[in-house]
Length: 326
Image (cartoon, rainbow, N blue to C red; front, side, top):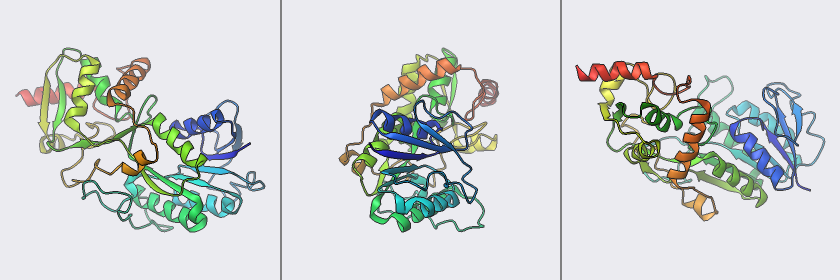
């Protein structure tokens, strides 16, 4: 039987990876702090990865596969130091944010990474992911796969980014919806279950090297149109320019009081990464409409009017719409 260790294993993506490995017949151990329940049937080892003895309970056996998605380079360095010699294959889920820049459209896996974060540096997600990749490569060499997703979408998304639009269109019904007027903006999303499947298949095949696990690059305008259609929105679309939105405190990409998925114009390569290697390796990309339907069903179940981690409240949106109409 294949012995698999998931470092984390109770989160949105890592929990799905753990269940996929279990469905494939593996004996799955989950190492986590225990903030959430581990998937049913897995072995849970409670540990704080910030401690020196974090891996003591799992360092006494051989592992066929270790999966790590941490965004802390220190945690990844600690894990590889403790477990690399006892692991046949390691899959590290990094991010396309690990690349140094987003200024080249269509860049592939050969693009340079950001400068690796050093101990004591202020936290920077891009540099932490780059440093974590460096640690995996240094200790595992040709026994490691590095999977670099971009925007992850799907049911249960804790970031609320992708789901904002289909939920807002559904909630607005025949009322107007504020959208960013950003010609040329693009979106590149991958469904969380497609990504989890790929991570497991990469481990089963003992794939080595790096791969961008990203969806097809689509115009933001097209993604919003598809979300609107699936949600059945019949109200007006009210565009606002990036400078106008920024002047009123509306943020980019994610977070409170934001319009998700758009970024400044000085990132022309954003959401255009090549996914040719992912497709060549058999990675699945379900149609955008299917992803949106799954997300809308989940948004309805969780409540279209719930508090969100990303986006505008309907009250804030109405204030902005009123300001545009003046």
